[in-house]
Image 1 (cartoon, rainbow over the protein chains, first blue to last red):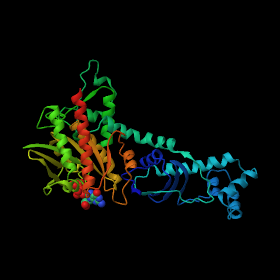
Image 2 (image 1 turned 90 degrees about the vertical axis):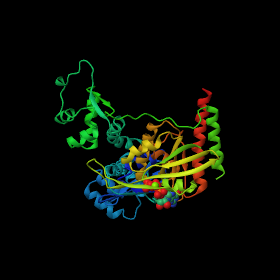
Image 3 (image 1 turned 135 degrees about the vertical axis):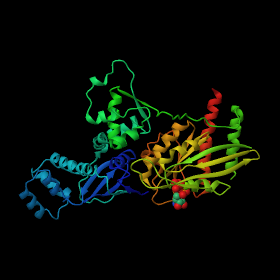
Image 4 (image 1 turned 30 degrees about the vertical axis):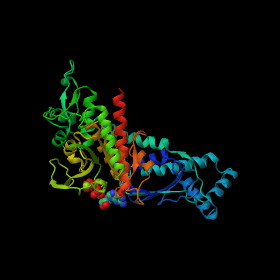
Amino acid sequence: MALKGNLRDFTISQLLNLIHLARKTGALTVDGPGDKAWAVFREGKLAYARMASEDDSLVGVLHRAKKISKAQYKVLKERAAAMSDKELGILLINANYLTQEDILESLRDAYVGVLERIFPWVEGMFVFEDGAPSLDGKITLKVSLENVIMDASRRLREWEQLQDEIPSLDVALKFADRPGVDLRNVNLSVEEWRVVSYINPKNTLKKIAAATKMNDLEIRRIVYGLLQAGLVEMVRPEGEKIEPRKPQLPVSDPEEQISLVNRIIHRIRSL
Amino acid sequence: MQTVKMVVTGPFNAGKTEFIQTVSEIDVVATERKITSEAERIKETTTVAMDFGRITVDDNLVLYLFGTPGQKRFDFMWEILSEGMLGFIVMVDSTRPETFREARSILETFRAYAPTPYVVAANKQDSPDAWAVDDMRIALRLDPSVKLLPCVALDKESVKNVLLELLYSILEEMEANSRK
Ligand SMILES: Nc1nc2c(ncn2[C@@H]2O[C@H](COP(=O)(O)OP(=O)(O)OP(=O)(O)O)[C@@H](O)[C@H]2O)c(=O)[nH]1
Ligand SMILES: [Mg+2]
């Protein structure tokens, strides 16, 4: 099945998470701003990756990793043009030019580096095609995506955490009526003061954000800080009340309710 | 005449109307009105539609299916629609991953309105662009215990299956409660 979409809506981190958790084998193409990335995964692990704008040959990778000089790069580019990366790698190791470790580390950094670079992309299209594409001659690795994702998630986490803590901007704030809390003793930033000045059970966070010209993230960040410091509490805006609704059934006896649902089931089956 | 209701919700264009129309014995009524939002960054004027389908169960019982407007801005409608519902279905367009996050948030909102059983329908599974159900479960961050059902809203059997799975969940919960 095709996995394709727009990065604006489905982030690289979500994509990698999916590839990792579903242990996918296939190729991910990301067509982003000014460049294009191509990465191959095997059973959820990163096998290979390159940016369209870069020399992805082993020689190129080693040069960017500063394992070989510019002069060596030139010579190898010419002489080893007919060789595959695998063959060249073995040659370099046998010639005591580089260790196997050097090579694998450079490749790992290069492949992971591609993912790291595309992480912040918020514009662009992606396609994930199932199946293993041919990578003849290329040196493939098995890099677990966990760490790569973790680094990215750390950045995303702030936003998500704030969303969890403050899921809706339709709530209002009130000052905590705890003894010992005195705003005058608290060091607040200018932004925090601006928010504090609007605190009132009638003002929703949405209103406060509009009044202080803050975006959803900014207002959440500040309110989160105030909540953590125990200065304020979230309250339902005055004049609004939402109570969880109970299902309404025309019959109240549990046995009759069960029989009613069974009648519906029976009817739907016969449709 | 006794009536019960179930709600079909989900993001814009997920296939809610289609789903209800497929099993309803009446033409789905779509109420439309334009609403401009009060807030600063409004997307655009939007059409609010409340779909409304009916299935006559027998001589004295009718099941109503309500489709919610997909736009989050109109969640005041959701609240009204969800009142007294037996359970709800969250429709997700399997071909549009950009709506998954919204679907997730709609699901959360409905759960807060009413602690009734629900199922998630991975709709448009007939499309070549549809995400696989297992991938969607991960993307939607659904617990393994939540029913995520492949669905083609244009296909009656498929719609019946989703409704039945929801009804089974409702039944299960009733039975569990009556044993208490
Ligand atoms: N291929 C395919 N198309 C579908 C399916 N279900 C719905 N559609 C199409 O998707 C589009 C949207 O369906 P609607 O039923 O209007 O969706 P909706 O969720 O009610 O849309 P809003 O009320 O505007 O939020 C229509 O063109 C449908 O024909 C399906 O299972 N498969
Ligand atoms: Mg509709």
